[in-house]
Length: 172
View 1 (tube, one colour):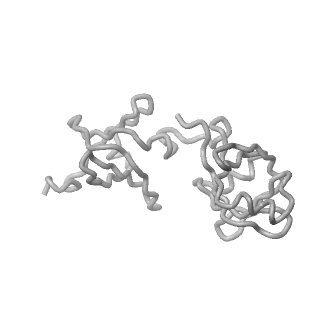
View 2 (view 1 turned 60 degrees about the horizontal axis):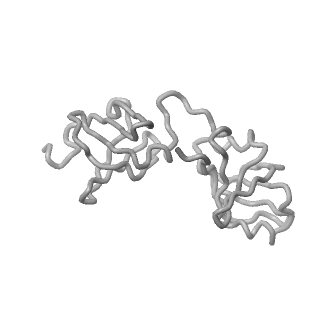
């Protein structure tokens, strides 16, 4: 299981005092209010920095880290990811999973037939959609609904689904 979770990506500087603009990579951008520190991943290394201030502007997060006090210092972190360790991640409701934990799982239909590997999750607003790719590279889009996803086992890296009628080409 991945030890650190990406919660944002730094896309620009903000102002001249070292603030950074980041795009949140979390369902709840207000989660930054609860963080006292976070990691910035730069050149494959994690740097733990205290968070001094957080503001929200038009879907973005403006964040000020301790020790980064100028625009030129903040520019060095552009395109870097902000991470938290799993211990400080948001607690998920039952039957909810971090996307990074289910990517790579094998997906099986109700007959135990391997459909492929979960390669991506599309967040559509109403419900997520699992992108499942088979050995030939063909993709199947599976709605992530309770009526479709019958079991998720992170230990076994396995997801069992009940394919809705008409979803697969061979079911016409």
